[in-house]
Image 1 (cartoon, rainbow, N blue to C red):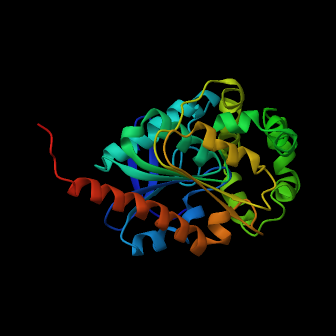
Image 2 (image 1 turned 90 degrees about the vertical axis):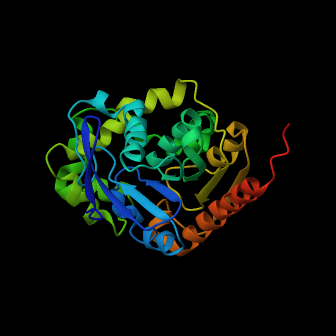
Length: 288
């Protein structure tokens, strides 16, 4: 299930992109096992507040292309998709919001292409270095990522008996039927798992770019996959303003469970940055 959008060719893939509203751009990036439908309750609120909201199905998900081969899901390709999408839409700079793998991609975008982004809002997943350095709680919560490395076996394990183990893994979340409808299509479960197979080693062991744009980290207390420390320690890798918000009683899927509260946090954060930019542009140039 995706939010219907327009098809945009970006490099070697065609992406389904929901593009709505006018004003400063906000790019919304989802993760696994979602599509841009993750943002269906958030996007209208941001658009109503005066922003242009751009929410693609990332490669391998929703109605976007799902190229075969694990290598096609390396972070560098997905980062290139985001930059190419902004280029195709004529957007020079945007605010960046990511959830789950979308947050991971957001940290790389904010580090490697800071000139294209005013800010980063990372939901659930902290800076990759903070994730890699996190303690025992995160290691325990993240064990499933190693299961996902088992090609073929994981696909069978998750999809058997009408995706019974997948339903258990997502705690029988109400969105599960929509996810399964997407993942049951030929090659789509493998495409989603390829994000883990192509990138887990890099996330855990590689040197990662620091974030040089203002960053907001948001984490929820009932997240089954992510510990709080991997988000709070992200401040160590941010060279600009850092803000942290803890949301009580919510699971991993914050955009679905608390769209009003999440939108309020995003709008407050990006609004402050927009106001700061306007004040800066009004400052007289007194240079010689």
